[in-house]
Length: 293
Image (cartoon, rainbow, N blue to C red):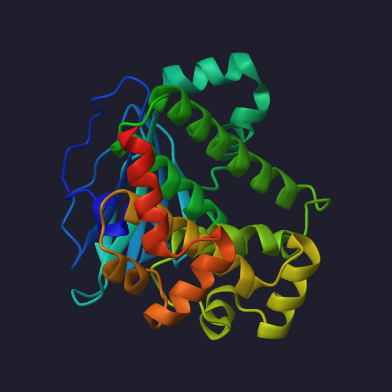
């Protein structure tokens, strides 16, 4: 799905329909006024873009992209917008106390973060962009599963929500216990996740350098050492996989290669034939024949 298809129209509703959890991706041109309120569930708030303070128990938290907040049940909170020009983007994850209790029975590792918040009254967590891109990738994958209708949907959603929660718990635990993993060691993983989520966009080294705040040389060197192929080869393979799926779904070859970043048909033709041994047209015709059997 495209990112726009994963968005939800903003609602001032402050209660859950689901008994376990709900997740939303909001992208508003400007902030919508929301009065002070509280919930009977946990709210995980992941900030992407905007110019806003979040007040929790009348204490302001000035947040920046990459930050996330955890707001426990019963805690009054509300946003204050510092201008009406900056778009306001965020992920909102609601999790019921019952679901958290069930996770506690499975493993205390799932609720270390909630216990930490309850003990320290620290609700704000900052991240570098490498780490936050990893979080963002997991959230987009989860929302895509929620909005989709693939086989095994419910099982996949449960696995992904638990994986996200465990990742957040591990992240905070390792920061608090100094022995945490160096995020640079996971750069290649974050790069793969970012590439997979942005195949339709510019994926030049210049773009990646700006996104991850590390040099193009370091990106290339780290990626090749850990993945075994160059980052350019990886991007091409992933785009070809996306093109193959798209044209088999009935999309035109022209629209497909343009969508996934190939400059012209000849470049797409050469790359496709090198990867799959057939031209795009031959591949479509072959699969059409197989379906007719």
